[in-house]
Length: 173
Image 1 (tube, rainbow, N blue to C red):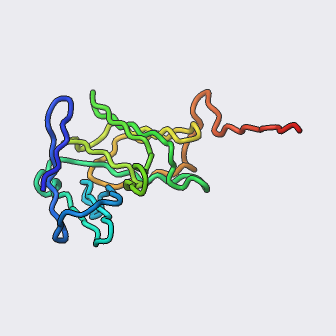
Image 2: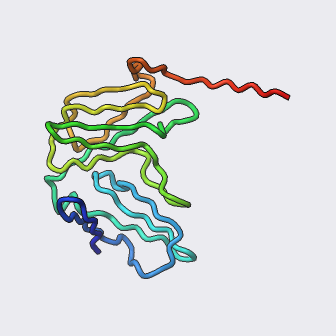
Image 3: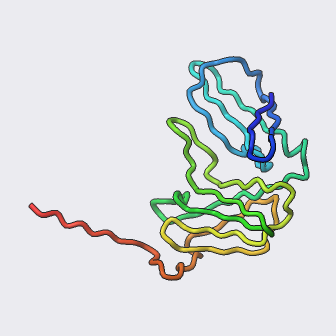
């Protein structure tokens, strides 16, 4: 099976191979993740009253020159996945942007580890994480084709922005 997604400049496709024999079934939910940790996103389809389908994306084997960077964000208590954080990767004149929002509709999700598809970029000039509370982390000279972990506790205060915004509400009778 092939999944195609047109982009503004070209048509990109990924080759998916069913792990189990897939047949038509009513779909209840879909999860997208690099389940085998090879950098390309696989599909897990939860069917109604049937076993789930797992489709492994074989792009990394078919196009080994294509590279990725997976980021494990570690937020604070109450927001361990750092939901609401923004990640921007830079290399030369290229920019990639992701927002940490690991949900996709009712009963569907994506991997909570943001995953950049970087073409054949072997090393990023920088990666900037704008945390959900205004703090910032900047990493430089990051090799691709790996998973990195970034912790909120190591972030710096952003210039002119408070680390936390406290809103106090007074209720009057």
